[in-house]
Length: 293
Image (cartoon, rainbow, N blue to C red; front, side, top):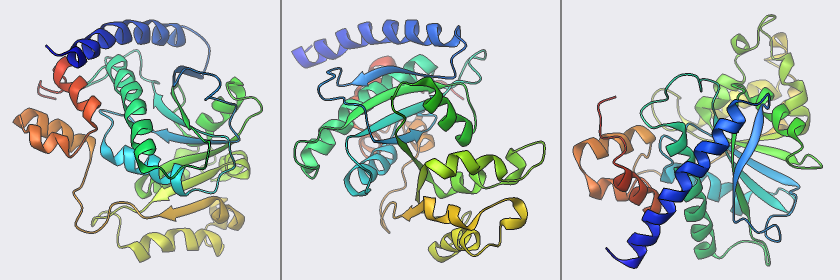
């Protein structure tokens, strides 16, 4: 075993128990949001942000698609500095055994992914001079965007509360603007506090399920031109959304499902194209996703 392998094994033995303790503390508390880890830990590199990018996912596991979404936002979004990234995991079903990877393992992979992301950004060399973006790993009990944003603000983890920029795919945008998720009136009115303060950066999705790029753009134009007002959608909300490019034509489709399928096939070469190096090492070392789902 090389010294690098030894260091990685030692880290895993320390990381999982620490995360398990922190997660148990959160789930037994009345809190709706908490930051469990920060990468790096130095407060000098982690000032209170003016812009908080929120990447909310199941991270089962973190993939290179997550890497692309986060990198694009940090390098190209116009948010005010200091800026920070929050990797957010919802645990509203923490009383049930999560599958196929436990919350503890997902949070561990999110922490490792945060390290890989910072390395990736450093290699890109395109951050503003003197800027080093910290990455938080957090958990929430809230299932919906507007409630998650409010829980983050109310937690005072970031004081004063920064502008949040939620990083999503087009499929998530469709759910966000679907009135059925906002009982009992089933209108979009509950989104007013969220879209009054925060933004959403939406990545175009490819595939027959979501239509062509023009059709996805029309979804927001309908909002801007008032065709959602009967549902409580305000025209000015359209300015709080930005549609950005995702993977280029011909690039490999990356998803957590494809990662899990590659592991079951024992296809290590495919795995290299789907996840970052250290996340891949963790998955292999911990023998994750090998059991039937």
